[in-house]
Image 1 (cartoon, each protein chain N blue to C red):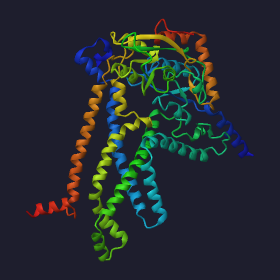
Image 2 (image 1 turned 60 degrees about the vertical axis):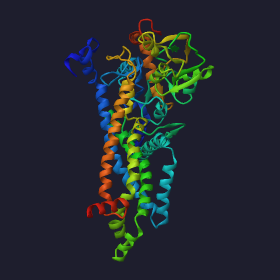
Image 3 (image 1 turned 90 degrees about the vertical axis):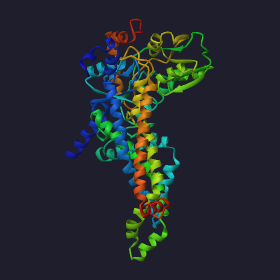
Length: 294
Length: 240
């Protein structure tokens, strides 16, 4: 990065450190924090959407839809995360490739499955083999988002279904008394009121999601924990910047990052709770009302 | 008729498989210096990377490096996420049951124990990387095997006192011992394991295997492989 970094082994002290901290691998390390943040902010809304869909399906009066919703929740919640991340992602990837294979290579004669191997025609590869590494990484990232969303969506579905049931029946009945249809009652009364009941569960999920991001490495994405382990490990003279085992320092850095994330989340969640409690028939809402009167 | 020709041509093209696709994605662990590692510029580097960059150029293939987790390196090859594995992977009977190997580009490796003292208890707790030939060997001895995801963690386990010794490739441990200022010394005898290190390839990819087999034979014959071995593993490195 700096001109004086050309011969790192002759450097000392601060100069060495400034060169060390600006190597290509360190920039990948800094970038990986961004990847973690992007994953969080993309996955959370998608997972919430999955959860909302799942909760609606599980509470649906139509039996097949209800089975689907309940089945989704039971299945994902019952299967260990690691199994999901190891096998589901490979299955999803192979599923996509199998489909494109059927479309693009109808004349392919070799079997796709040969023992443990999975072999589609080169044209059906997603992304194609010739694509730059960047495209492969973005595709993997996409798969990661989908997997995270499905897993966390199932938990969110359970939380939201519970929250929907927690809205006082009297509230809904009032809506019905005004002549609203079931749909209107759902949209105008139940959904705006359920969030306060869902929030404790959802905030738990959010914090678990933050901590689950190191699972990204299983999916072939180099996240912050991977880089911390990689950079902190003992480096012999083969490297330009040899150093002993510094993992402790790198992991301390990670600790600060994750603590900061948790703290910010708590502050934001507190604010949302206060806002959502406003005018609610809950203890917190009641306390707010009394405070306002006094 | 036209359709027939077209589909025949298409089938021929498709049957070309690995030959038709000119980009070969090679997976490596990137954490096993000097075989393969990620250098300070963030690029894959090391003996294997230099060797295969040369071989690919000679064979007119575009090769792309993928760094991946060691533990899932074989399943991902099988599911087609990349086409080859060059990650210091020794050729063993167990691995040959699931994937194919080219001929060895590194002779049967010597593995060694490194420990805080030369008289360390080698039948005590021994650390090794998971799914390696060394882990398999330790499991067969009287020692208690302690497995780690990366070789670096296996070394750290000895440093922390979690294990009595670490068992790994001699070439990997050498800089660890040499630069440890006496913290690590060799313990016990060196042991030769496996049938050398080869490039792992899917069983169905016989054209690609033939191609690399030929390319490796060329560099063996003209001596460039030996030069590379000396460059990365020192003048007294094993050679062909």
